[in-house]
Length: 191
Image 1 (cartoon, rainbow, N blue to C red):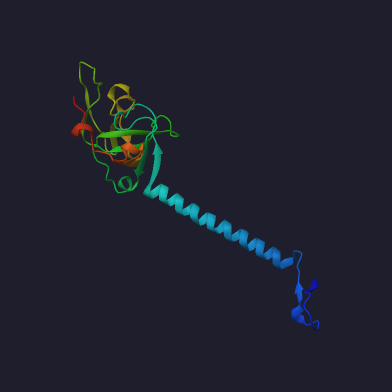
Image 2 (cartoon, one colour):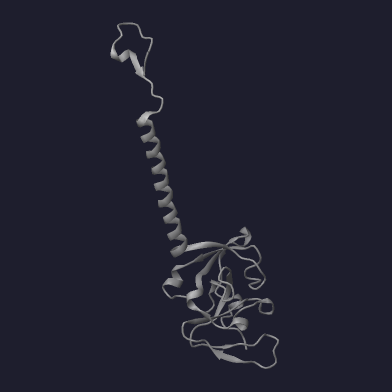
């Protein structure tokens, strides 16, 4: 449909404008914009997935097992590259899938790697017991030994359950920074 522009002069082609009420051109533009938006959303979603799966993720920790190093509601950054390149070492704090509940993550310190001899008894036990960490496993314990469910309860944890290594505390702001390898320079739990 064409409408007169109101310009003076002969009714030449330039004095008329086309007004569309939909039509195939408008539909094509709308579909094109929608598909473009969906395409960008999928691309950015894939980039975000790869970043969180292979580079790292932000984790909010809860529970008292890692006190005083990590307290309730602290936010940490867990990098994944160490896990993929088998660079997890004694003293590292890691995020792993719980051996009891795969929907839940745990935050613990690596006390022993495969082949290491570790103490399996609690801090208040009179008689100390020891075991060796089997191949492909790690021994995990919380820094708060008296209030931690860890490898002393469920045994060695398979390396495949490790999700990442905690390298940075982000929240609260006054505690922002890299985490020490171990509190008070302690790498292995005392017997």
